[in-house]
Figure 1 (cartoon, helix red, strand yellow):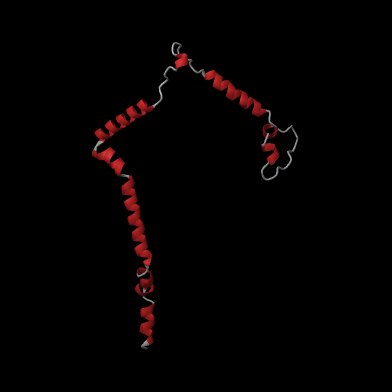
Figure 2 (spheres, rainbow, N blue to C red; figure 1 turned 180 degrees about the vertical axis):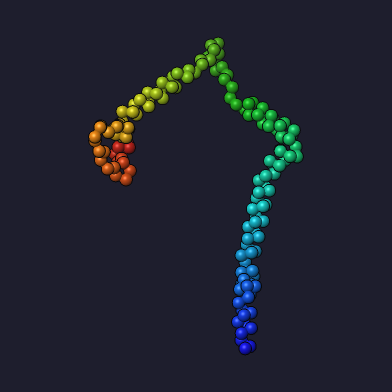
Length: 140
């Protein structure tokens, strides 16, 4: 009879979970939560300052930063060779036509032709390999 209470005592939930409560898991979990809270607070300092503490100062800092960025941007100045002539304006059409010509040239590549070609009526396409193209076809 004396062993029955010991067996029951061993099966009590507090006894069974005592190993886990004394382990380092709880301590590690608390440390992880603390580290996350510290990182969250450290990365939110600027937002809290600008949104809640000093919104007017944030607007002033933003305007000063924009003014400094605009001052640092290169301005189109006249070079010695074009001192008297106005600077030529870049045309948007030149860049577009170059891009369109490049795209038109790519349309006729064999890979693009094979990918975009439609099957004829009643034709069953062949089964592709796992990539569908070979390395030789990718380097025109």
